[in-house]
Amino acid sequence: LPESYNILGNIYYRKGDFILAKEFYLKALEVDNTYVHAWNNLAAVEYKMKNYRAAYDAWIKYLELESDINQRNVIVKNLEIIKQYIGK
Image (cartoon, rainbow, N blue to C red):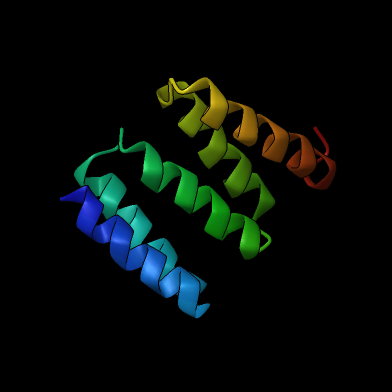
C-alpha cells in the first residue's frame, strides 16, 4: 500500500534522513502515482535537499490531483517561494 511507504518516508524525514525518505515516497508513487500525500511529501523532501526544480515539479503534480482548496492554497504559496530559486 502506498500509505505504508509514505509513513516510512515520514519517519525518515523526521529523523533528517532525506535520502531514505525520498526513496520511500518514490516507492509509494510506484504503487499509486495518484497518491497526493506522497507527491506533497516528495516535494517537501526535495525542497529540504535544495532540489528546487524537483520540488516544484512534484508540487505541480500534487496540484493536478488535489481537490481540497485549502491544501491547494498552501502549495500555491510554496510554489511562489520556489520560483525565486528556479527562475520562473
